[in-house]
Amino acid sequence: MTELSRIPLAGVIGSPIAHSKSPQLHQHWLKHYGIAGHYIPMDVSPENLETVLRTLPKMGFVGVNLTIPHKEKVMEIADLITDRAILIGAANTLIFRKDGKIHADNTDGYGFLENLKSGAPHWNPRSGPAAVLGAGGAARAVISSLLEAGVPEILLSNRTRVRAEKLQQDFGSRVRVYDWVQAGNMVDDASLLVNTTSLGMIGKAELRVPLDGLRPETVVTDLVYTPLKTKMLTTAEEYGCITVDGLGMLLHQAVPGFERWFGQRPEVDRASRAAALR
Image (cartoon, rainbow, N blue to C red; front, side):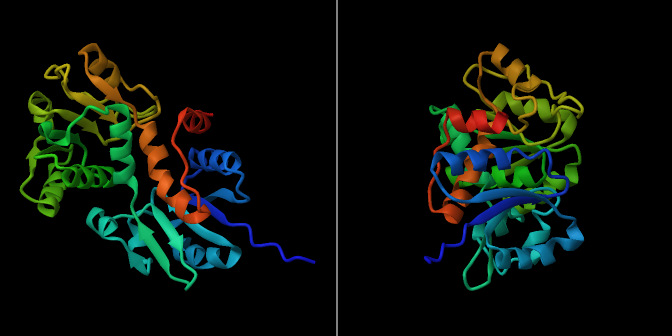
């Protein structure tokens, strides 16, 4: 009898996790490329995270994605951490190595930039400042990727100013902080506007930052993708701006992990978007 090779397993860990669109995306790719593998959602509480991560490789798991509330906590657990994950202070993609070590990376910034390039291919990072709303983990990934891409200055505002100032300390003099009540003033000078907050998401409060400073050449993107077209994006379209929805970031950030786990680099296309939206 020929011994069959072990079927690779991957998944996403969070709490809660039932809302995640990652399983349907990865299962679509597995089926599309004819790969014998599975991607499983797992609801794991913070106190059990390390035990679960140390156990999964013994069960045939080759890696996992992490979402809220585990992205920061895993930095204390992982054996190896990439430079970009250290800079961002969080990890969303783990590879379980054959030597037993957990390798942590952050692909959120990569996913953000790839989505931006896809949705606004004529955007030039050096064309002017980027205005960023929010100062959480997503904002850290966005700012890191924008600075690396060559954006000359980040104009940053957060409802709690001290959190924005912390990012300014971490990322340096190319970050300028505005009070939240003055956030609308950032729009006047920005060639790119990014919402990294949850404001505007279904079930959350609306984003009430004034957008009357938008110009047709401003690129506007919202990391919120429920709804797919937020009020901010609708308003930006009325000003003639190019807009980029947040779903593409979810799709593109998943690419590096899938490639490492299953040995195939997946393509982000219309079928991928449709699978995530099902």
